[in-house]
Length: 581
Image (cartoon, rainbow, N blue to C red; front, side, top):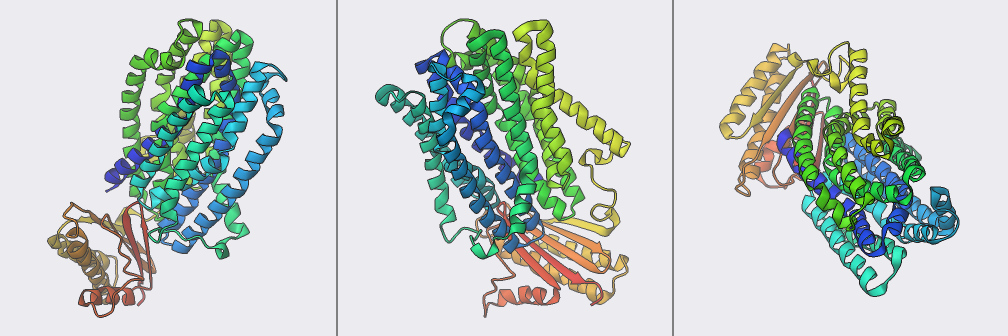
């Protein structure tokens, strides 16, 4: 089930990351082909502000993933609704504040970014920032809603929203350069409007009765606000390091080769952002699922998740790297059609960029697992080293010997050095090689339950239900449980699994999967049922007079605590039975 879940989530995450980055990529193409190298340089100088607004949205989105995956892992729906409510409130307030700030201080920001205080470069940098920041509420809102759409299993709507955004951006950019001649302000405004299009389409789900999240002002609390902000801070460090890196790389390139190098760097980073959709996707899946498995105390689940993500890191990194390596001249010519040094530098920079994809995917998988499992300071440290310190150090040192050409190793060298740093850190903390006994997870030795206190099984047929129920009863007896409670646990499995097979598996004719997990936790037994059928809440919805519901009511009466959540297109039911009863 984990492999299937990763495949589904990874596809949607990569697609959404790719299409979101396409807005900036499309702007860059249009600017390069219709407005010239000077405008392209202005776009590059404005990038730190664009990255900053994205950093805030990414921080809030990561906070959502952490705290909501935590509450979903524990089966706490109201806690999830509290996270949803606070996320919307914070996004609205912060995005409007950012928009007003840039609108009022656009000229000062352009000067601070290196555009001077007057002239064409200054004007175009300021105008693009102002046009783009009008869409800050929508762009930040979209980053917040993406994890909620993922958790609600609305991948189709997510794809529809980002596709509509892409189409709108292309159409509006063309209208700007061919009809309205709005220059750099028009290019930024086109992106803003396209973000609002995506937000409106995604908003239909959140305003419908089908939405599994509920906005409730009574759930807003200072504690929940601080929890969301703290949980998202590591991702803010990640984006902040990108802002710092871009700022200083722009300064270094401008000092060495002026606007030509700036234009080439702008193209490399823009194409690189789209190529990095695979690393963003891997990181997003790691953050969400690691949080769920961690709060379920599922060591095996975390291990399988990370093994799957690392395997995908190699596959996707190699495939994307080879593709971009071969297509680099074609991609660059779309942005810089004229032959010359800018085009040559961009092709070289993009090809060297490909060497960092595999380590970047692995770094994102590991870093986000550490964030989801509560290692905040470690995640922040890795983010700053990966995003700013290592790439800037590599670019500065190598450029001393190889000139401006040496700067292009910044991404690959930064990612490789980060992966080496993580490996050495794991060895130092665990005294094992990273791949030995899943040392790379950096989990405490007593995390979760030991193998002898855990029983996991997958069920596909009614015969499998009987076999697992008998296996569970024997498992309980072997752990010193009396026959009464052992029979109750076997009955819980038989009733809930039979109901899922009879009514869930046969509803749509598609193949389905039910996993059962039993934990012996001294004074308590914990049963977790997870299936990929259509949503059904046995805790709160049991139709009166339905004979099929008698078994479910009996199970709910036996359980000391029962919690249900529907997330990631999965039904998740957790039962707790007191071992002393």
